[in-house]
Every structure is written in structure tokens, then in C-alpha cells.
Length: 81
Image (tube, rainbow, N blue to C red; front, side, top):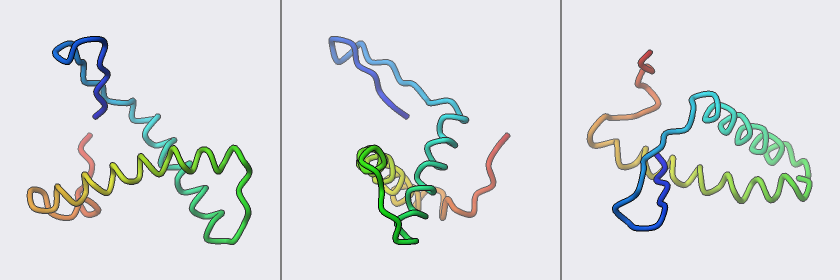
């Protein structure tokens, strides 16, 4: 969940990205990860994208680690429809 603040702290609105957007982000992470594992060099644009996606990966790991005590392993939870 992302929080977009406009002005004062109490004027924040929580927004959740579209599921397709989240899936596209995951796909980009996988593409860059595959290139790195194969030893391919990244372009300048991909290097920049890698830095941005590293923030997303860190946030995802943080959510996963914090949810272990409440939900168990998130990798084995079936998605709700």
C-alpha cells in the first residue's frame, strides 16, 4: 500500500496499485534478475530501473518478514479472487 500525501499529514490518502501494474513490476524484477544471473550487462536504463526496483524488493521483503508471525509463509498462501 502506498501513501500519497498532499500538504498536511492528516490529508493522506492510501492507494493500492492496480494488480496488472504490480504484476508488470514483478515481471521487470524477474527480467533484470535473469539478466544478472546469466552474466549479461545491463544498459544504463536498466541500471536505473534496477535501483528503483530495489526499493520495491526491499519493501516486499519487509512485508514478508513481518507477516511470518501473523500469516505464515506468504509463498504458500493461495491468492484470493
